Length: 328
Figure (spheres, rainbow, N blue to C red):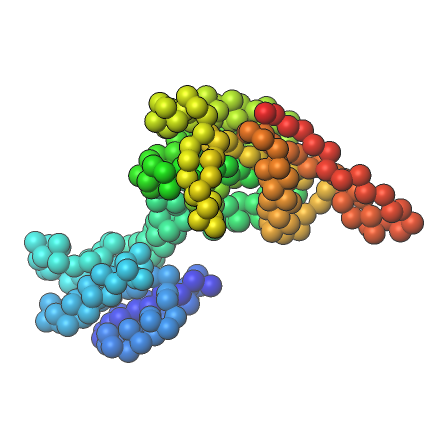
């Protein structure tokens, strides 16, 4: 259950807040800011609700100090303002939303829900590509698994990205990441406008969910589009020669080819899954396998439950290994 920290000296208001929240949230109520801060620093809540009084600058200043801390600047704050609060001071109050005290009964729970939902969306979005991040990816996978929905899961990352980043700098590297995310998004959504999903794990790692019948066609188009556009991010002489000079992870000078994209694909129609981690682990295995081949390619895991785990059916001991599909 999500936790809401309430900071208020008004006993009547505190009782009303506790009553409003009890069915959906765990509320922890404090009458002063120091006690609340001790709790917040040890157990970060999902929302802070603060009853702002005209004659209590200490609470406002302490709250602003908390919000300027990089560890807590994303923590949403909902303020309950006295009915005659001067909104010209709005800029000095670091909050996400507010309600007037007179509107508490009608608006409070709605504003709490909106604050938490809005905050969750912001936290879950990758700031560079604006694509859903790990939390959203894992939840999306698990929900589909729980619904026993058939789907294909693709896991992609870039080859020779680090040398490119070292050679040209993180700014140009960020542009490559953004264009890759946009490219995957546009192609997957063009294939399946509804019911597909695209996420950014972080760095140069992306995932997508699409209907099994469309996944290899989408992967092929992603590769073709990537290979077509990526040379334009290199200086002309580097693009012409097909490689750059940089240093490997051990600091040794070496040459590296133009970036390529490798993808691993797994599908739920060939076997059952109970946890999202099983899906991502298999896709990562196939991606690692794809990286053994030169250039951009994908590899699909076509193994059935029995082929993947021979012990499922007693007496059989065959393991055919991955049945691969590729594009290069």
